Image 1: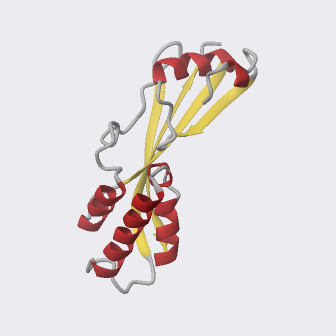
Image 2: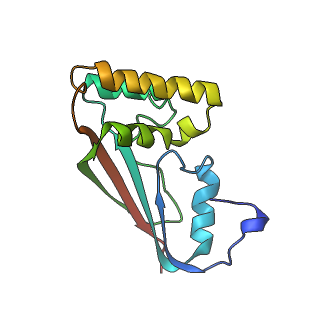
Length: 161
């Protein structure tokens, strides 16, 4: 969410605002919540979706370590804070499997913001380590598909009407 004047939106412009709350979540939630509240019409709704990889298998935890997402500040959080001026927050978590071929897995990892932003040499090294993991881990090696256990944490809250 851009909070500068170049991207300013008129107050009460939207009935609903949704965000896929992954790595791109706002850096400054104390600024983001009031800004979303400002652009929503009265009784407007905020919806947040936060996709997380479940690290319940050794290879999944190793993948997170390799790509640098395991030690992020919010890696252990399940739901973002919303707070005032929004009313009560409804929350739900949905588990699902993301099935990928080897090539799709590499592309998926390469598309993560924390991999995209790495210097070229480091990004190539990380993707090489991911290829090695896929080729050598007993749970992954030789498989046509990789099933990544995911959970989407959903939150929604309304402004007072």
